[in-house]
Image (cartoon, rainbow, N blue to C red; front, top):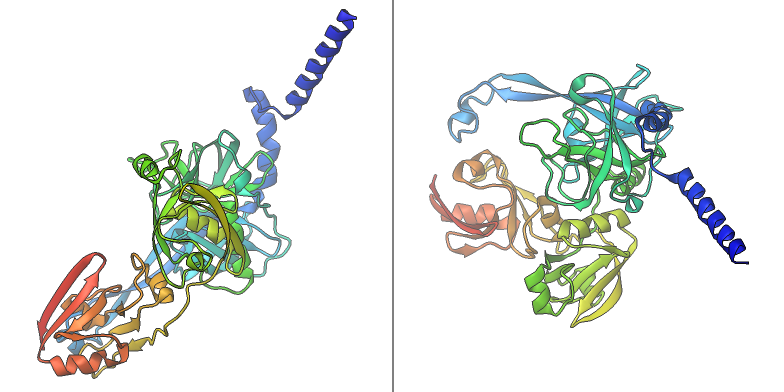
Length: 462
């Protein structure tokens, strides 16, 4: 009887080993080549090379921007200067939707996409966002395109095998392999993107931007965007934008959006470190402590308060503000996210609607005309929509903000994002009245403004 039990246990162990052998990671160069060759053959046709060009006008006149001589020489010829960029992209649908990086195709006037089989297509940008460093393109006249499916990036784990496919240094399509070496990386990459990244040690070099990071099933888990380097080449620390955010970009592009719509939190917070965790009575450091809440914030309306610690969004932990914004962006405007938070040591949850930043009170956007004191100066009343558009720090909810200083406003020191507080001692609370206040203050004008955390006093004479 004892021998029968031992035999049964042995067979069970062998059966378990056989099952594990079917799903184990390749352990030899031969096994890897056998695994990756068909994978690359399947995925590579959906990764494209992108050649983008934009023409910028460069003024010849040495008086450009001068408030006096600039007018006299405003008819001077300008010479065009061509800027070229090279990168990669990934086809995501049969009808030719392509994802790439904003820094590859953003503001391009001409885009040419070359497939792995040497077919070429013109493309136009449907939706682009500099902050996320993502752009969605549409290939002109494309149909029956090879494409990659999207895997939920929340299921990706550290240690998984991945391949990076792109066009580094313009040498043609190449493939490099590695593993996922980190998740939830924020604020560590060099590049335009700011937010939440998947880290990989698969070699990524200039030209790989916009290329595919795929798993061993051939699904897209991320879009390669930047590297951490001191030499300009790959040091084995690359970053990819997770596919969950790419999916939201594709959806908004199909809905006809031309600018990415990001949900508004209406709050500011700080990561909870060990010291703050101890003072709040938390067991383990983590989460985001709410420092300030706008009265119209969906978090405030859902019952959250200053001092609460947000732990997670839809079951996913968040430890930095960029992580939380990423989770909200993936959820999308019009949806509802479940927020887990702690108050007075007790864990709670609330359903928070994902909304666009409200345009209330009305912005009253105004541009001072040519006969004004500062012609071309564009102003608006501060509200959540304007604050989000300009990326104003904190939660400003009052004042008049500079949208564009214009040539003369820039000359006296104004910049986009400056909040006007007073002109010659008179409070400024209506953008339509700024020119009249300037006229009354002339010829000696003093402007008091706020720029970030600095207070400015600008004086000039007409």
